[in-house]
Length: 143
Image 1 (spheres, rainbow, N blue to C red):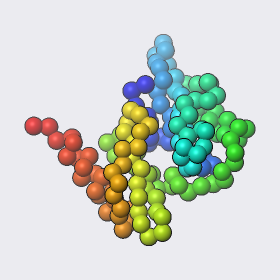
Image 2 (cartoon, rainbow, N blue to C red):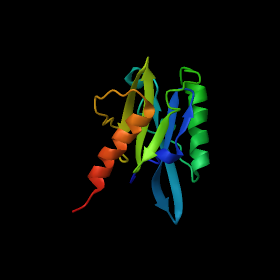
Image 3 (cartoon, rainbow, N blue to C red):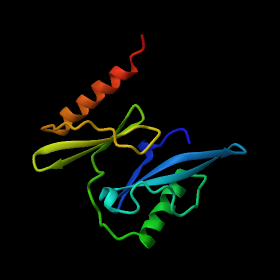
């Protein structure tokens, strides 16, 4: 696996289904997936890597496999909007969420499910996104 395909992720029943390229066999791509849960570590499926052990040669197929698994095996969390405000920037995943009037974010690098967000509060999503982009752009500068 070289990176998570955050830009192809799908929010479903309180989970984020994140596909990734597992392998290339005879010129054909084989995809797998990981899950993030809106409930975080309280959910046993948070950060689960392909609990079905079934892969697909299409992105649509792997998402359908994950959705079927969640329909059959998860405690139905319902349609949670935790992942609605998600963005990708420089192949990283940024998830914006609010608690009251305070804006927080989760930030995952392209190659691992490790939240690298700084403990910073924002008044709105735009200022949060701008702050993150500025810091990521600084890391990209090569001298």
